Image (cartoon, rainbow, N blue to C red):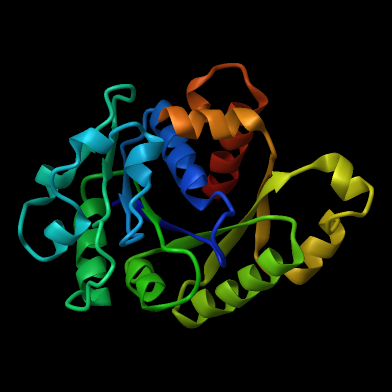
Length: 239
């Protein structure tokens, strides 16, 4: 049985989808079978991050409402032997879906894959509740800004109330010089503000922006510190 990770953020712009895409790609590079599910209804960006937007026919809404089988909505990324994605619906109003739909989907996917990664919508609303319904653990992606950290803390408390006891934090878009100069919160302050374990720090790097615009997960490039960083994150999650 596979493990289901929810990747969430308290606000938009933290790099949540970038992290979900590269986390899944990192696991796939190690030989694990992975599916990444875009549950950010109405925005649908995960397919762009893999350059697979032209291959989306059925989406996660179609799967959960029985329009198609799971395998019909799964898009295989040929650059990885064991990685698939399922795109989100381009329409946001999905009032006929319930958390039970998501839970059933996750149960079926965990039977087929080692890792199921759910890319949740940003913020705290009904979309998050539905996306989190089938998750075992949650990874909160935030940035070193007071507003983002406050929202991350509120999100963490909401996830705990939803019954997700194991939660982690990844700090993205870190500029070391600004942090050391005191222009952004320092690590000691950040870890004091957030209760979950900090399992990764990702520096701000223009190459990440370039890779996402090209539809190429940054971990595809060998020998980079970013790829090693994601390797370390996956190792910490396995502990």
